Length: 245
Ligand SMILES: Nc1ncnc2c1ncn2[C@@H]1O[C@H](COP(=O)(O)OP(=O)(O)O)[C@@H](O)[C@H]1O
Ligand SMILES: [Mg+2]
Image 1: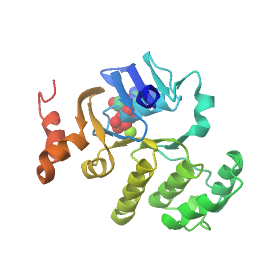
Image 2: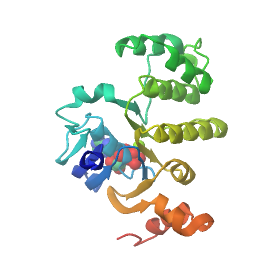
Image 3: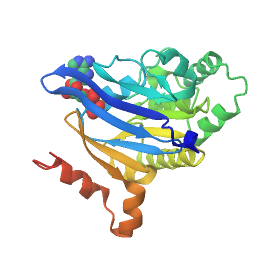
Image 4: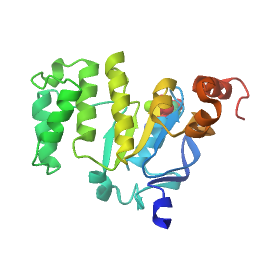
């Protein structure tokens, strides 16, 4: 049982100071296997900064981040195949069609059976014949979603993944995240949308000006408060002046 309690994602006193109070400061959190952990905060709160450390794109000023027992900075290359990532800002090769890009990613990842990618293309209703240059923001978002899930990774790092999707697709996406959680995937979901975190996550941290100001056990609160539970209220309490200090 001891093994079960080892966190899949562990962020330990992680600090990246960009000066002028900007960055992420003393971030500490654990995400267990099969959890979806929400990272909730407005623009500029430090969500992407934290996530870039999980992805090994940025070296911690101090502290550390680990996934599956490996250091996210020094062992980033070893982690690649175990993680699915949806970046906050999506950059894709403009000259390719969506289908060509997905084929290329499958080859890079050594995926020989396209069944899962095809399932995702159908689920998110992507027209793979369209050139990325001509795609709307929402279509590019779909390509990024399919790319993150195609290799069926154990860990998903999702940086505001549903922005740009229409409301129906947004709901479908969040339902899919909840399904993947039920399949035992470990998910880190940054968002500024309460109901999305509420729908998919077991726990969530509220991040404000680079600091975690609260950690919420959503499952426990829902058990306690039932229908009266309102994540938005918790969130706003911490964003009022002085809240959470
Ligand atoms: N590379 C960087 N250099 C300097 N400042 C940065 C850099 N990256 C982010 N910041 C600043 O750090 C703060 C947190 O940004 P970010 O993590 O992108 O927030 P979020 O993703 O929550 O919107 C912002 O004030 C942003 O301007
Ligand atoms: Mg961001």
